[in-house]
Amino acid sequence: MSARRERSHWGWGWADKWLDRDARAGMGAQVGAMLGFEGLSPEEPAPLDAIELAAPRVDAPEIDAPITAEPAARIRHTYGKSYRDLVRGFAGDYGAAPDLVALPESEEQVARILAWASEARVAVIPFGGGTSVVGGVEAALDRDHRAVLSLDLTRMDRVLEIEESSMSARIQAGARGPRLEEQLAERGLTLRFFPQSFEHSTLGGWIATRAGGHFATVYTHIDDLTLATRTLTPRGPMETRRLPGSGAGPSPDRMVLGSEGTLGVITEGWMQIRPRPTFRATASVRFDDYDKAVHAVRALSQSGLHPSNCRLLDSREAALSFVANDGSSVLVLGFESADHPLEPWMERALELAEDHGGECPDGATYGTAGEKASGGAAGTWKQAFIEAPYLQNTMVSLGVIADTFETAIPWDRFEALHTAVIRNVRDAMKRACGRGSISCRFTHVYPSGPAPYYTFLAPARRGAELEQWAEIKKAASDTLIAHGATITHHHAVGRTHKPWYEAQRPALFGDALAAAKRTLDPKGVMNPGCLI
Ligand SMILES: Cc1cc2nc3c(=O)[nH]c(=O)nc-3n(C[C@H](O)[C@H](O)[C@H](O)COP(=O)(O)OP(=O)(O)OC[C@H]3O[C@@H](n4cnc5c(N)ncnc54)[C@H](O)[C@@H]3O)c2cc1C
Image (tube, rainbow, N blue to C red; front, top):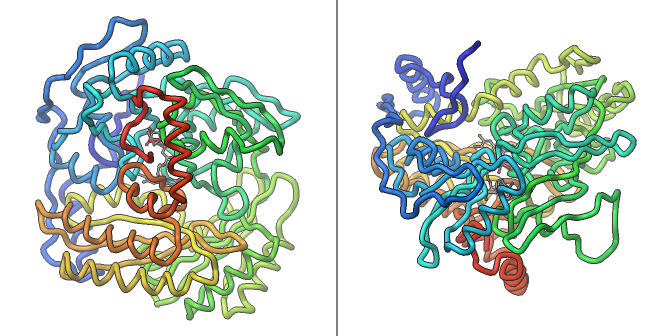
């Protein structure tokens, strides 16, 4: 039998993908040369067995549910996977570890845990894959609670029911991406929801954070694929009807979507599934002029063609992903269908791109079931996309601040926002770190505007990197809010974005949300300090 593959206790992904010292040093030399950062040399993370934890503040209760205070479990449930989490985990700082970790296997066990926690004044943090990048799973203790319990849903990971005539599946919330897809694949079906964190994140986490997935247009958020939800609140279950549509008042699913563990534990969702695609088409289009590329994407977003992939990489992003190194911006385009060949759609999309100065000298690649249609620049981009989070682990060890932020903005305000973001983040990196680099890609596009996604890299001062990072992050977030953009398109609010979320949402809506929380969670034990 093969050994069980371990996840990294501090960084992104599988532990066996952690590069050795020489490989990281080589990467440091490469990044240093590309960005002009000097003296990058790799350090080692604190080993799991050297991490010291405070004693738990409560004993595990004697209820029928698996609950542990074992140190390794507490360490693995302390943080999500933001840059800030990685830095603290790397340094062995686990002061925020939860006191207990529960691994329920059934709704009955979840209900028992919530009843005990409400009585015992213990904060409960629902934990899916723990890939939050906004402090959504961090066990911050406040004065109203005696202790913190992390509630890991990943043992509830089955596809319970498939209703093929409506293309719907009832899926447990703890299913991670691959587990969920492997069960649907047995019937030739798929959810086709592939966030970059797909391998390690869960359906419940996606619903709780309104995650953004595979499709660059139309079905971008998990919201678009959620037909019904079942949530266990401290007051009892709340289950919605599976309906193709409904005009009956405000939608209860809409309240659960994005609730970030503050109202209850999502245990199941009825999801819109589809046949696996048989036809695929990809192409990459180069532009000398970024503004023209933006106009091309706008035309595409309003054309009704609905490409499944429509990611515009600016010249820096194209260089960092090894897609182009000649100063051009690159549009990665894709179409897919389980029903029809895609030539007419792709040809029209390329025409639109060419109308705006785009060039696609190699033409499009077409593939049918079993064949890949993502060679060339599209394939290179996809590989870089999958590996990027591992690169962030390496950057932390090299002392490079490496983080991303994302937003959405109407087309008419994009240019002003983009100019301000680039200027203000560059200024902040200069102040905090002496220099830095920022790049942009569109992750999703709508007829009314794009969702730009920014990556920044700057040389850190060891030991001061979190203050340096905070200065850059604040400059970015202030700029988004000042220009009428959203503080997040798909990374959620958590604890990190809360001040800017409060500036973004109407104050009265905040009061209504707090009132809903008091109704569903009267003792306030569900993920306190997050979102609300
Ligand atoms: C490298 C990387 C790439 C990423 N790429 C994407 C991307 O492409 N698209 C995207 O949208 N996001 C992305 N993210 C962010 C993150 O993966 C998403 O927010 C994801 O939805 C979190 O899922 P999770 O299962 O890991 O949830 P967790 O991180 O465990 O939890 C996230 C929040 O949801 C709550 N929660 C989790 N499960 C439940 C439940 N069953 N019931 C109630 N509340 C629950 C938690 O309390 C917490 O507030 C990325 C993150 C990383 C580190």
